[in-house]
Image 1: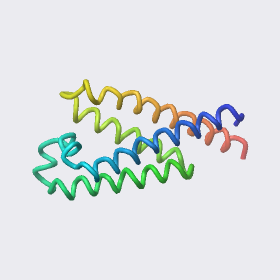
Image 2 (image 1 turned 135 degrees about the vertical axis):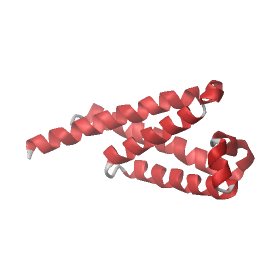
Image 3 (image 1 turned 30 degrees about the vertical axis):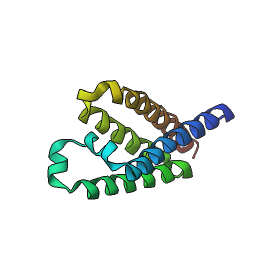
Image 4 (image 1 turned 180 degrees about the vertical axis):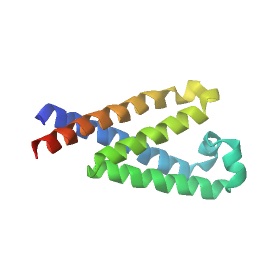
Length: 125
């Protein structure tokens, strides 16, 4: 893998990690600004405070995982699924979550870059 691709992978990993880390901290600090992004049926099943805390913990763990660079194929895939879930469950607020579409594509680009790199590594073995 050449240096440009490695650099692109690091930029994508850190950019996505920042987004997940920021969202987690912001939702813990200002829960009322964030809880509305969860579908109503989920908020009816799980107390809002527990829901936000749990999802924030997930986002922090995902951010740390992305920062670490370990098993990036999996962390990028989970990031893409999380961003797709946020976007799909908030299509009514698309003027706000349209940015998540770009982040989703960044996660998919990262997935493709590391998937391609890991398959080449396997071919060399």
